[in-house]
Image 1 (cartoon, rainbow, N blue to C red):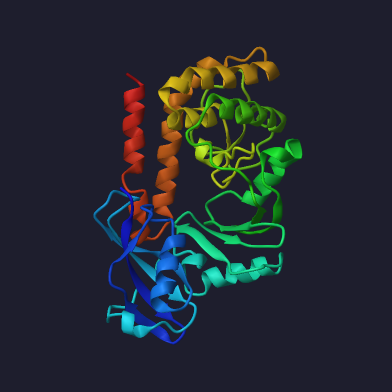
Image 2 (image 1 turned 90 degrees about the vertical axis):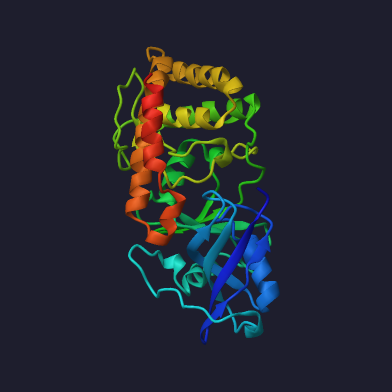
Length: 347
């Protein structure tokens, strides 16, 4: 799978303008919209923002096939490249502000009140869980992110972590409800994850979790589990190596909840080559034993395999219950898949 085809339903300042022919885009992920906007600007002669996914045919969610988006042109497009089409519905239940015309531009205007851009803002990704834009500045890129209301306040969570290890998180330039502006987290993702990546990230995150243990500061996970001598604390919620940077920073804190730390360890195991599982378990266990010598981390991991799938099932159902119909395709079937995984892990 190397790409997808894109159909854009184009709204312009003067009103709905029509649809494009299917256009080839080199990346397959539906939420990766930077190349979509590049192709559309070349075709239409004006910059665009992708607002939301309208539908998809073929491929396998969330990649490939023919994907239809509602797109906002930031000027009057070349209408000779467009065909008559039905205008997308003006609004829908659970539609997010950044998925409406003017939404991305409002976010950029907010960011411009915090930093001085040296070039155009680039919309990198957008879907039902976030929109992310890259803003060039004289000191390097900064990252603008907006999320739905059911997620944690990412700026506040990063602040909690940074109090104990500022090198583990990007700097927060500014934050407001459902949005955050972050300094760049340099370095590639930790794909494929290596033993060195595990040793760089996991012990430092365990140390922060141990320091933060105590009274809950976020909503708790819906799936409690026995402690095995480990404290309930801040959990990242999506602690896979794609959210680690080789510089040692961890990003994407909006899934954070208060719960058992073994849930994060299980997320690492889920995304790592099985050949690394023993190493991950050993590094995580040693880290916790250095802080809590009487704990039983390996026993906790065994139980957490099932608890993590239950937690994921609940989380995905929350997504489905709180996002608009056309974008539920990203998560449809995920709760059931996690529940099947619980049954398999119980055998």
